[in-house]
Image (cartoon, rainbow, N blue to C red; front, top):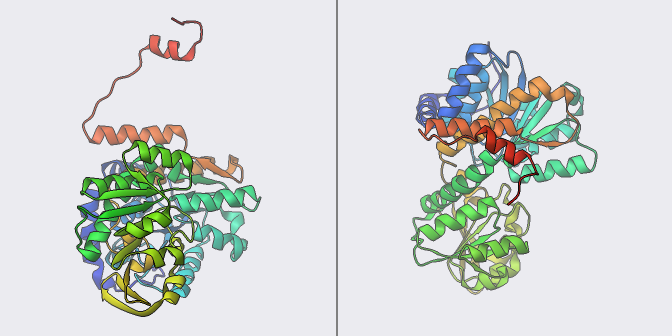
Length: 420
């Protein structure tokens, strides 16, 4: 069957196929789900429109769904996160309609989202909620056919909960991001390691001895702070939530206002899910040579228009490093245009953690196909059975065995009569 697509170059396909094969080696849980889907064809003729980071790990998720019988259209959830070779491989070898080119402009980005929606989805998969918001604002004629959707990231869940609260969400969404087997590992260990990887690939700086400022102490911020400290940096955490700030203190980090941190920081990473975190006032306080990067989903965390306004010259120093020369002569270096530095300048999360995230995605799609018509138009958590099953399967692949509660222990935990 001939499919529509828009990728950089199909000649890159062999390289992308090998990248997916390498990643699959570290994704045993998803591989087991793929084998089950393939054997039972659990998603036969289900139409799925997906807006995700087009990486080798995502490629393996698409293969699992495709082997299950689904028809898929995939587009990128960030203009700089696409691995062009993976996009080509999915088209050439697996008959997945892909609309994604690394570095595409904003107009092309939304054009690709609309092309993915042209499939007429029964299930949506999103990472940031751009696909869902486009569907609800521009393609409402397609909504009646949608059974349900999944959302991969914190930023997207925030947007979707707002839609549900305002009674504009028109089909059920499962917040995959909130699964314990996702955010405790993907957000913390995945974002932590891959963010440092992205900064290193872009700059080749030494973390040891530097003042490393992390804005936001959610699960992503925790992971970034943990890994930066492990690399020898002096970590400073900036927060607006008193409980998270207190937790950062107890975890051994300096905690202060971002205005104070701006004066002493060498490296700044935003991971809040909010906008205008680093602003003009902070840029003016920063030292010459300060490096700023973002690991939140959208580049609005850094006020780039304000940085442009303050600068007298902008140079591309190297791949993913822009030098903004401010009045007075100091330079501020912006990494990856303020996009997700771990995906734009590196390869994103290690496959080992994405194995759990995308296993949740695959099983939640199946859950929606089976139960979605019985759900209301709101944001749901991942069913506990799926969350624990993914963790159980991951432990099994690691060769780890754990204890089970005895019938006596189960009875004790379910009762109230026994005390001291």
